[in-house]
Length: 175
Image (tube, rainbow, N blue to C red):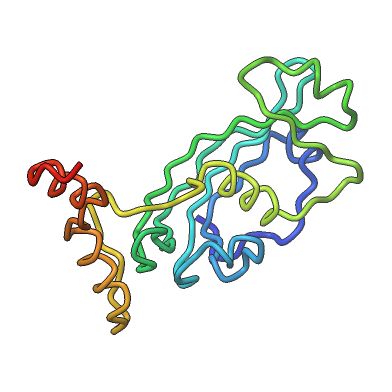
């Protein structure tokens, strides 16, 4: 495992050489993921293999780690394990992307080099839930606001029936 992964990679060159990248990428480097994370300490492990299958340049591998996301119910941190298998076809045009085998996702490479963190971050953003929540029924936190408590109590007490006056009149025969 590499102590330090390269910042930029040339996927086509690595595919020609049947290269491999294995190491850890710090979560603090993943800028687009920062808003979703409750804590950016730690890292994700990547294990990528580059190669060719005929004319198809490809990246296959795995991304593993544990991310701390914000629970959308209680706003507390929830640990979210990530274990994602990736299969990317390296393409230089949309026409090539349309001809990829069904089990490959396209990685569009305009120039020779791309940021490794962008590949990892794209894959993580695709697999994370839109609304992360704890697996158990977590409660909305009480921020010391009694208005929430009083509204819950008001909903639980039954309001007076607006037709109760008519029921009383019917019983007395004044109708």
